[in-house]
Length: 452
Ligand code: ADP
Image (cartoon, rainbow, N blue to C red; front, side, top):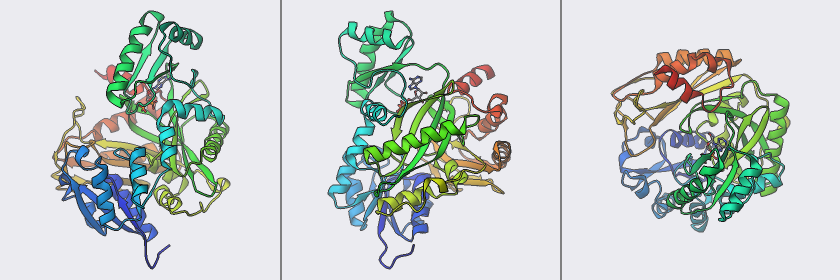
């Protein structure tokens, strides 16, 4: 769709996702403009935008997280829509309000829906109401009375996990294995929740010992259509940070996935959700348990794009502009298998970030290989941001082919000037447990311990 007076999308993000959004805007014939920090001033992707403007210093709090600066830049560059990408302000309801207040459209759900889903207790209550299975435990904040708390834990059965209602990024959680340690754990988690998230509310659920992380991608328009675009397995994680993602999740009954997918789509209709989103689940012993919803595009969306053939970012922009989704659920057909390796600029042994200048770069290619990166030879990897510098994504007719292509691609990849975890990914792809498929969220840590 090319237009005579195209609308303008402001990219309120940086790095590979900023480039991904620029590409989607080009596909849609939209003008696209970017805000950048002083650290990103020379980033080559900025030249691909129609205009760009500095929004502040390197520190994210003063640039990519600075709501007045972002809004002012978007207005100055004539934006009609704002794409928040992932991270930064993407799940900030105050930002959603500010975008709306400045007369622009946020590419994402409405602020009140974002607020509700951002509170894990409220999200859980909404999911229970919509018939989405959740981790056993009350859909309410814990009372402060120690006896009442102990009673709830007894009812759920140990081990339990205490979680901050306003939590995120894997923080504000504590596992409790017996009654003796409950009271202290409660106090500590509450203090942490207050400190990190400014909200001391805590809730409790059953702690699952060896779950997998399986999630459902959804896409909903403002005309009442909500679709689920399949599942992803993101169990290969280090400290709750995803390392490898794949679609579909290996070895899970497709009828069960369809049932869960339908429920996620139905709950989107129930809460009036518009945009792309992800329902995250723990999967253990053949059962799904909802843990949280992400109300934004995710890092791992490309694996779903490769198996469905859809451009999720373009569709996400279209529905924000009021378009009807151009397809029905029975037209979403998943074929083959896709796998994504997150390449981080970091030390392979200590996992410490490795900022610096990329002196030379060779990216892989060939059949079934897609590389999403904003990095070129000469790029400066800043210590101010996330250390992910590229996503190597491989598609195959089946999981074996996808794994084999991913391994070949990682072998081709050369990055000089900064350290990277590319070789670690090669080792992980060759791990017999991972090759079989269906490892738990603790697999990586176990693998690492065994290696040492
Ligand atoms: P965050 O928003 O901080 O990422 P999540 O609720 O998504 O928090 O949980 C992050 C991770 O913590 C999960 O991927 C899982 O590894 C672990 N986790 C959370 N809840 C449970 C649970 N009930 N049982 C076992 N592990 C859990």
